[in-house]
Image: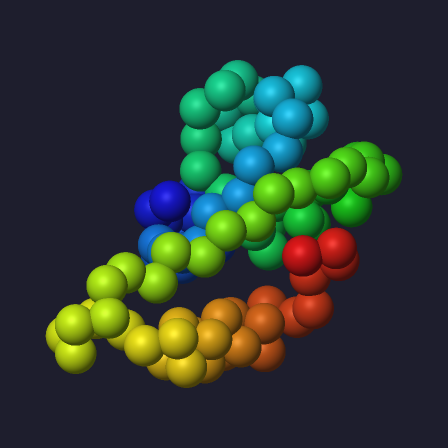
Length: 90
């Protein structure tokens, strides 16, 4: 989780896993390093014609009144979707 090397958005709280051999093909650093948000990863996969399974997780934090609520986090994700378009398979 962090800031995407392609588009620069902070996608903390949202993570995904793809197979290592697939990641090396789409990684901005062309190795196991580099950071991509799910949207830019999806664009790179589509550009290469790669179809793969991805495990996506959403970390919401603690429900203590000071952390983001589920609705706030879902609204943030919807904002990203509207800004960057629909994401295939995610």
